[in-house]
Image (cartoon, rainbow, N blue to C red; front, top):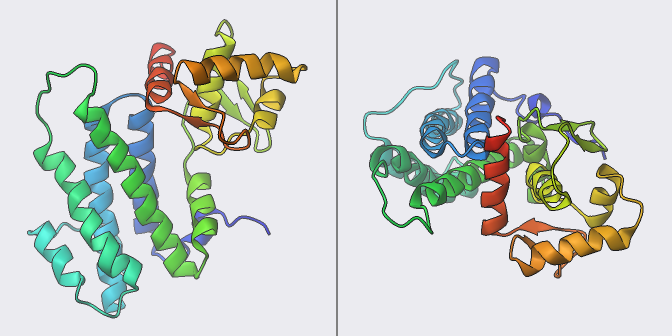
Amino acid sequence: MTLLKPESALAGLQENIRKELLSEFSGIQTAFYASRWRDCGLAAGRFCEVAYTIICDLSKGTQSETASKPRDFGGSCRKLESNTLLPDGLRIHAMKLLPVLYDIRNKRDVGHVNDEIDPSQMDANLCMMGASWILAELVRTMHDLPTATAEKVVRSIVEVKSPVIWDGGDVRRLAVKGLSRADEVLLLVSSNQGCTSEDDLLNWMEIRQRSNLRRVLNTLHAERYLESKTDLNNLRLLPRGMKRAQEIFSELGS
C-alpha cells in the first residue's frame, strides 16, 4: 500500500487552512528539536486555533479559508463536546485535549528552579505529542483510515528539519563529520520519529560489523540514553537521550 501524501490525506480541507495546519504543526516540531520551548508552546497555541476551526467547520458542514480564535477557547471546545455530528475521537477527546495544549502558551510561561527536570521541556513534549495525536485523528476521520495508518501519514508530514540529516526516503545520512558513533545514533534515532531499527542504523551509518554497532547500543542503553534491549526493531530514546540529541542539534545550529 502506498502511503498517502499529506496533501492528499487532508484533501478534504480548504487549501489555505490545510497549509496553515501543516505549517503550525511543522513549527511545533522544529522548535522542539531546537530546544526552543517557548516557541514550541506558541506554535502549539496557533495549531490549536487552526484545529479548532477545522473541527468546528466539520460540525457545521462549512469550510473556512483561515483560522479564527473564539473569545472563550475552553468554553467553545466544551460546547462542541455535545455536538453528536462529530466523530467521538474529535468530539470527546480532541475537545478536551485542545484546551490543555492551548493553556500551555497562556499559563505556563514561568521560571523554574529545578535544573534536573525542566517543566518547560515537559510542556514542549506534551505540545508535540498532543498535536500529533490531533492531526492523526483528523487524518483518520477525514479519510476513514485505521489509526496506525494515520500515524504513519503524520510521521511523513514533518520530520526533523535539519541540515544535519539528509533524508533520502529509504536511507538517511548525517551531513556532518566528527561526531562520535554514540551521538550519530542519537541524532538518527531522534530524527526518525521513534521507528528506527538496528538494521536501519547499520545501513545509514554504513557499519559493516553488527557487533560494532551493538557495542554502541549497549553502552547507550547502560547509560540510559536509549532503550535497545526490549526490541531492536524499535529503538527508542529515553529522556536523557532526547535531551542529548537536542543539545547536539543546537550545537550544530540546526
